[in-house]
Length: 231
Image (cartoon, rainbow, N blue to C red):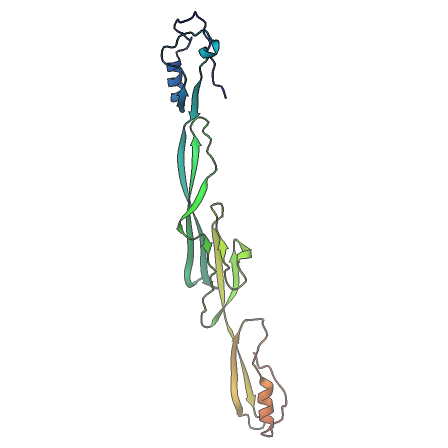
C-alpha cells in the first residue's frame, strides 16, 4: 500500500527539493508506529538525466508488539448428603493456558492467539465418586451433563475457550432389608437372617434364597408363605 507520493521538478544535477522533507516524513511515520525498512536515496539527491533514476521509494513496515494473556479453567466436584452437609472433600482440577499474539501498532489489530498449557493438564482425568459406608450416589448434576454417568465423572479435555465446570454428587442413605426364616409352630429362627443394603425404590436381592429353602426342606420344613413385615 502506498502511503503517500511526493513530486518535484528541477534541472539536471540540481538538488531535488521535495515539497515535504522526506526525512521529516519518515520521522512522522515512525511516530505512527511504522519502522523504516529501506530508502534508495541519500539526504541530498540530485536530478539525473534518466528520470527513472529520479524515482525513489521508501519502504516501511508496521511495528508489531508481542502480547500475552493467561486464562485458567477449572472443574470443581463437590459431594453432599441429601441434607446439604458435605459428604467428602471436594476435588478441583485446574489448568492454566498462556496465549501469545502479535498486535499491529499501526492498525491496533491483534492476531489470533497461540495457546499452550503452562500449569496443570488440559486432560482432566475421570473421577470416581468416593464410597461412603451406609450411603450411595443418588444423583450427579453437572454443567456438562455428557461428562457424568450418573455415578462418576468422566474424563474431559479443556481448551482456552471452555467454560468452568461445576459438578455436584449427592448421596442418599442406604435402606436395609432383612429376610428371616421362622418356624411357624415354635416362632423360633431356623436359619440365620439375611440382611442386605440397597437403594430406595430398587429391587431387593437376597441372593440364592431357593438354596436355603431347599436345605430346610431336607430338614422336613415346608415353605408356608413369605410375608412382608414392613411397617
